[in-house]
Amino acid sequence: QVHLVESGGGSVQAGGSLRLSCEASGVTGSRYCVGWFRQAPGKEREGIAGVYVGNLGTISLSYADSVKGRFTIWRDNAKNTVYLQMRALKPEDTAAYLCAVDRDELCYTREVSSHDYDFWGQGTQVTVSS
Image (cartoon, rainbow, N blue to C red; front, side):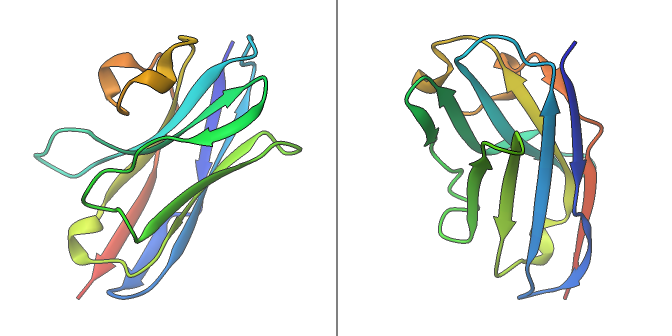
């Protein structure tokens, strides 16, 4: 059974930084994607970044325009953990942040969309004040 645990959320002022972690366990198969999503109250869940884990290593997928240039995703293979470094945070980044797994081997051909991801963590809250 896939189990995902997010951590690292908190409250920061605009312009600050946070690093989120997504520790994954129980993922079978050698090729899959791990995505980061966020959801603010009253808004749809937004896919913001992802990585493809394959036989030749890890490849970053496209970032959402809203975070491009400010957020960076990477995976620590030894820890089986995917990180999301967030810089230059804005009040509009305030949301619950969730990570998820897409076990489709062709996941790297798609944008990071919640419709394609099978397993989800509980999320971690990020609040950015102005």
